[in-house]
Length: 402
Image (cartoon, rainbow, N blue to C red; front, side, top):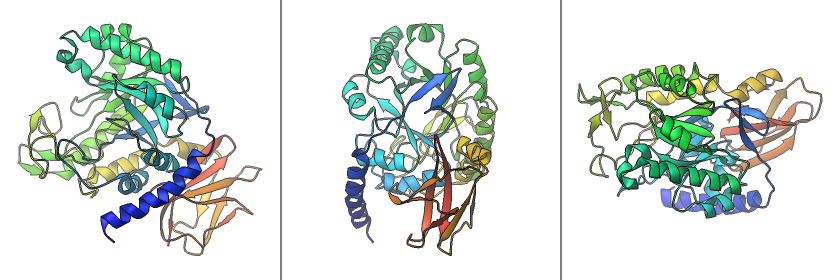
């Protein structure tokens, strides 16, 4: 099946899905308390990725969210951080259905319309302004205070429109007292940190200055080694493992991380139709050089690199939904499912509802567990995201149907 025809079919199916999801009522509250983030009363930890699809400055990767959501779900990524606002409602619907939240970038010059339109959408985790704007005072008449004043105005305005979601910013390195004192309406300070293998040092530095919530909005390593002039997936994977684990060790002071980044982007360092090795010196493992077009945990053609599996493993181990699952002693079997019957064993004394979503976020089944069994004999082969509703909690599991 051609990509054009496949995408056409997907669009038609999403029209049906969008009609269903936009005609439902959603009630969701995200708030910050004691440095931690809570989603509808349950602690939420960001196991995230910076998400751009390779669509900039002449590059067109040809891939869409329909291609990416299965990869994100399979890597146990629960949050994406964008660099521009997603205006396609069907795309937001698909992320929400797949259990993926969005840290939504807003344009500081035009944002109220977007917040008003999407503030009740279940995909939204929090709003964010700026990405390392403190490195570019020339954008603000060579006075960075102008940016901080604008940031405070934007954050305050968003909070007056939407009281149910926090507002963040992605600061280059640790914000100083000028930034912190100028922006009291910022709920979450994100930091883009490139300190070799130790971004966690920035968390403790910022925590000593403020009691606001903290997350690492960018950290990571690229897969090209300029010393050997060759790509090295193993080195990127090794660095990613150390970086993520160091951040997780500071989870008492931070709400998580959005690793940089999902896929390689070919537009950054040269010809958008080829992968160039250009970049700049920076404290990046293991060559002190940032090769701009090699940062993805998947290639531009969506082939997982070794770092993808590192992310998959670490995020599975640190998923709060897994901890909730353990609390209720939920077990599902068999997995993979071949007989058509999925068994869901638990220790709660009330009926549980389950929903099954395919890899692009379409709900394919909604049912109540009868005698701890669900009939999925009509479900096609594939990987699915299982949502188990336990009154106020939702437990997420992946299952394979064969």
